[in-house]
Image (cartoon, rainbow, N blue to C red; front, side):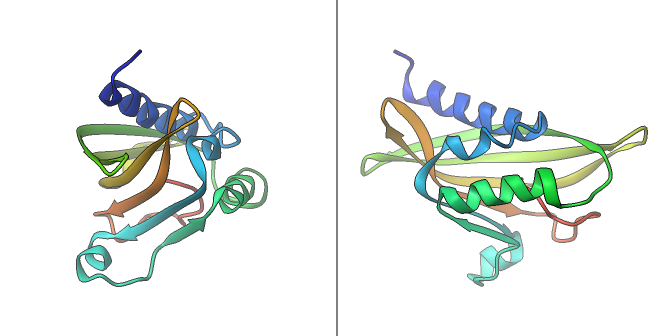
Length: 154
C-alpha cells in the first residue's frame, strides 16, 4: 500500500492531468460528494473577504461547471499546463491539510505561451472508500487579473 504522501501527490497529479487534458468529466470524481471548491485572489484571502472568483458547493456544482466549460462557454482554443510543487502535508483529525504551489501556463492555438495564473492550493484531503479525495480545494491566486475570463477550474 502506498503511503499517504504518495497517494496525495498522485491525487494532485491526477487533478492537473484532468484539467490539462480536458478530461473534465473525470475532474469531479476527485472530490467527495459534499466538497467545496473555490478560487480566491491572494488579497481577498489575506483580508478574509468572502468574494471568490469561483465557488462550487458539492459534486453537482462541480459537474455543472465542467459541463459549462466544455459545452457552453466560448473561448479561443488553448492548451493549459499545470505545474505543482512544494507539497506540504499535515495530518489532522482524520484528514490531511495539504498545501502546494502551482503555476498554470497557457498556449494559444498556434500562438505564444504565457503565464495564466500563479498561486497555491490549500486543500483538505480525506480517505473515502479506499481512495483519497478532496473535501475542500481552495485556490489562492496571486494573479489577480487574468488575461481571459475565468470560466473553468484552476
